Length: 137
Image 1 (cartoon, rainbow, N blue to C red):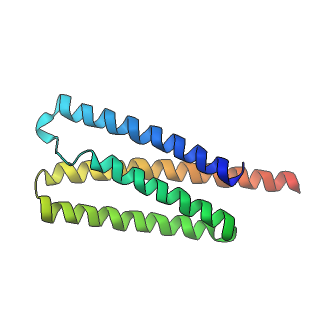
Image 2: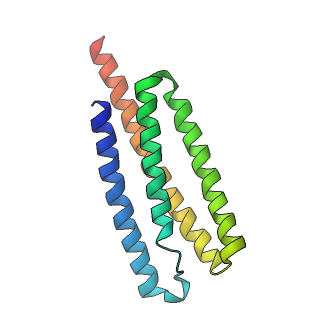
């Protein structure tokens, strides 16, 4: 699998994941517990979707320019994602101050969902890469 197809594969699957998860969770909250729905809800999946694009472009750049440092970039991106998620949570709590607990639960639910998806993607990529190297030998 070349870099372009890896990026395309990730972006298509990640887009579908965020669209479906965003709609299902949003409709679930509005339908079953409407008192917990907050106006900023659409920005939560959008935040992780945009970060997913940033993630895959950094991953792609690393594959092209520094393939030996891919694990370091992966770990760094996870740290950056956690930092930005915590900053978003802090901003929301300080500035918006409405449905704080609902926002925090939703934010970290999407954080875990995107973290799981990205980890599985990276694991599969590394596994396929090692298999290709074994075949070449």
